[in-house]
Image (cartoon, rainbow over all chains, first blue to last red):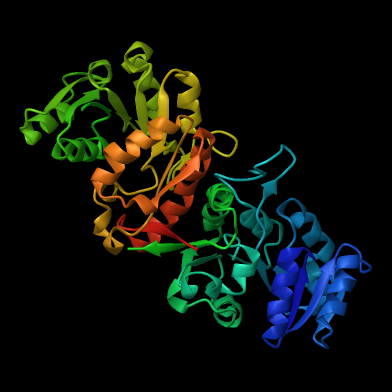
Length: 219
Length: 219
């Protein structure tokens, strides 16, 4: 399938590489088509299924779009991508509203009674926002077997039930997530919980001194 | 040891019962010494190690104090308990700043760049605040073996290293928590993460339809 990736940071490149490995055609987009990371990624991928362009190019290209931009830049990036290029499509939102402007650890620019996932859904009401993978270290997103034989949880939420099912079958299971470990929390308001968990995640990351961990819900 | 419990709700009663089972002398405190739940608890416990009184009575009695009041009432309850009764002692803070005034699910009255644990520590600088157990269903707090053979995590944080060690040895391990699963996150600012996790906990609780679950950190 044709997939557009917004963001050329570590998350964008990791997701793009994994999707290309799974046989998808990927266009990675950034603010400028001449973005160095963008060009470097395509050169590195050296794959007919990898291409690069602007946010709008990537959004127009993709049948499904991934938001892998920094949370502080996400709404701007999506506006540059353009509602006409996004409307009717699934937008997988992996971003977190981390605010580094007040020092470390970062706080959240939105939380508690709102979330970035909801802000994006409100700004683009005709887009099917699916929030997932945002609670997990980038390397682990696409290779859950790196820890505990892949037996740990990924959360998913969003208002469109069919869109969540597409992302589970087309993205999460091919990445290696076990169906029993994909936890559907409900509608897009549930993004609050997964984004606010970042505060605990950052403490755990600081204590463990590695991103190679995740939570497993036990009952 | 003599332990004072502030709060006669389900958490206070559960913790008090478990501490009595472990051989401690417990005084459970509420706003009024004639609180019905208070009197009922002592009658139910029917144990020479159970007694009841006001918040101040419980705080004066205990060598260690547990804050098991609702988060919205905690600072008031602690002021009624009185700094002179609390100073120099360990205060185990199990509360969460849940705000039910705007409907369900509750939001947090403080979060992101602050936490209730920190608020309590600031209000009572001579008290050794240890935040723990607040991420866990009450029945599971005192009986972790209820799920996954007891193999899941409890978090602890606070500024006083010796106080955390006392609570691990005197409370958490006797309750059944495995030493390897007691996760010290650091100083009291880490209460932000464990309190903000409540948003995800509430989503999980809604989906699982039971409180008999917890997270296990896998690496």
